Image (cartoon, rainbow, N blue to C red; front, side, top):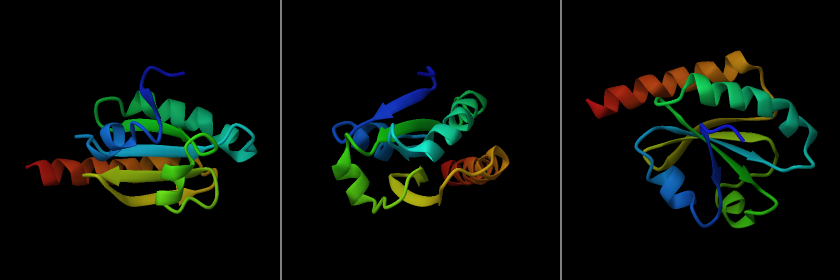
Length: 116
């Protein structure tokens, strides 16, 4: 897996996502999900492009059902954006890279504003 992507689990979600100083994009996915496989290369590209500005995490919903349930993940892929420990935005389904990049840009700006 890409060095800029963290594997999130039920056990480390609090530390890796909720306590992150950077905004976090969490890709809620499963190995059998076709649209998840379609969006995976986009997530990998964004992990490289936003390194240092955004943390990217992938959470396998089959293996980590408690966290998926906590956030009401009903469809995958769901790409959730967490800022300051809270789920603040996201998209459901495989969306084009420019849609995700636009959302990330919006939250990079918000993170900078709240840090100052």
